[in-house]
Image (cartoon, rainbow, N blue to C red; front, side, top):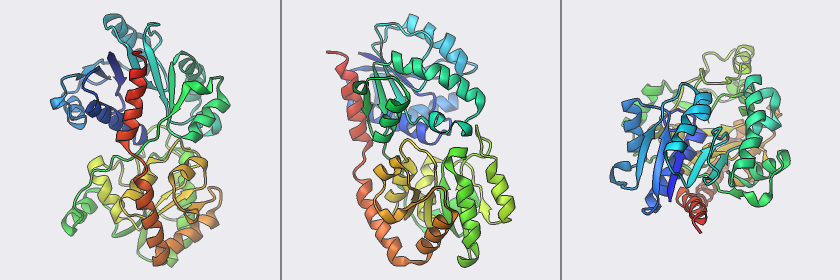
Length: 379
């Protein structure tokens, strides 16, 4: 078969969704030497294309190549660029995320990845212009898709809750981690510390800074106990200039007078993440809503204790009752933050359980399920 995969998110610093596209595609190509793969990107920048080829290990892949389809924006891609591509290429299977192109031949089997439906559950946290297009186009995408991939049982249940779709159409394929293991020594630690201007000891959050991530709660909880944990700063790793930045973050910083206590290192390069996690005292993931929770697995894999908001997808990923906090309660999180920073026994327990749970998730296994799905269309 000839399989086209939308890889536009690779190289875009989109955190979770970029990790999923990169790791699934890379592992599928390692498993499959028979089908032909066209990997579709909207970039024609030579450096970006070089990095994509490197990240996907394409140098020895005879059945895969990157196809650059430049488009001014997402609308042009969907309405013009992709219809032309389908007219010129006989494609058997097309895999993308969320929103489909406006024209796809009936003969093409479509697999659509949906990471979460936060735009349905927390509409007040999404920009109005985004809601307009999501409400207009997501139902169409689900209806046209032959299979919809949900990244957790929770996401599958949410899709069934908000959309008219047969349960048999949805496949649950879990995410995993893409941590690049590096030697952790004083020299590397100092290099990373200087690169991102990190403090010596810190509490870490890593991800996007959108409203549903509930970062103000973490800032307020930290502000409440910072005097009890001297020398421990707060690091919020994410792009402050990214789409839909939560303005309440700046408000929480001002109220708590934490401008000098909170570090914003920006986007953390994939190759550096393992070191940044290892340097943290604790990783905190306070989201109101998630589809899965890749950073929880990433931090657990690096021997870091984790505190996570008590929501269903985190329960699918996490390990221990004591790691969950009420995403509405500053007091609950502040108490748990203080305890995990000072209680060595509690830290060691969470670290040990996290290392065990992390081994239950594998990109190779998830890629095999995706490949089996692709091949099922050839029967």
